[in-house]
Length: 383
Image (cartoon, rainbow, N blue to C red; front, side, top):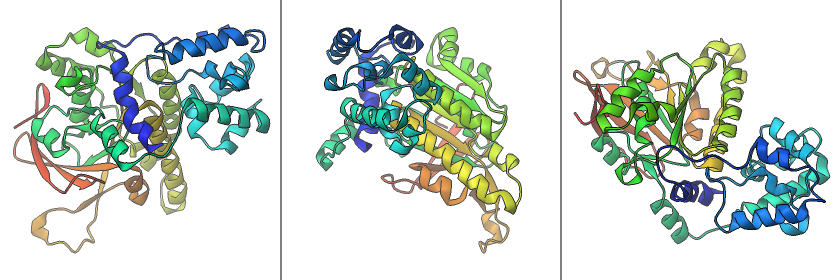
């Protein structure tokens, strides 16, 4: 599974060009065309063969109607009704079925054990999950697309930028630049690959009411991009409670199957969980709900190869034994749950004037270090 989440972004980007990704041939339209799998088996097989020859989906996913092909042609023999049941359960592409537990697939209305087994067998043929050598994994990581933060110093600290197919967490006090980085990257992800972008769209889930499209206009002017195109390539959704926040991820997965996206932002990931679950009596429920939300985020990163950027709030630790001259001590919200879910954790803190400091708090491959960046009218940039 790991090798797919690294290689998929580069593969997806090589198939398209420009800031406005093409239209998807799958989705509801493709489902509506499937009336009787047995009667149309030859047509489905021919379509599958055409896809394998280079006409695969623009967003870099395997279309769900591939499962309508007969079993002998790497399908599952599903009907239109079966596909509709899968879509209603939040399964919009074959990758989702391949990465989910079999018992969860069996619980989908109208599927059952027999169909679930056929779907899983077909999904594993269409989405291979094999072992690879360390040399192959290194090559995949070298081909992985990284998104620029807008600051060369910050990109240097991250050795190229924010990784696609991974969860990157940013935490810090208010007014330390978390939301400003999110706005800047909504624009930089639309840049050409050679300029630190991915020529793709961004989806922004706003839980604190801080999304401002006029900031995107300012950043677009800095890079000389068409303002209207930049705004059209950013999809925004406002979350009003923790349950709604989770439902938006299901909708996001469907959107990612329709067009090419490179970035998913959740600002912030923990704010609504802090307000919806109050007190120690609901702490266990909060952590379980947060763990489920983060698992869905990781699954989206695996399936679609997007970079997942989440912001996190902090809380003070007055009982800390640190000396007072070191200033107030803080730690991120979410405890070990969010600490284990994020591949890279960045800590932001305030500096002099408009300067901010980023510290590598945790990463599987980046050494500890700091970088200074600044917040300007054109977004995040070097001081």
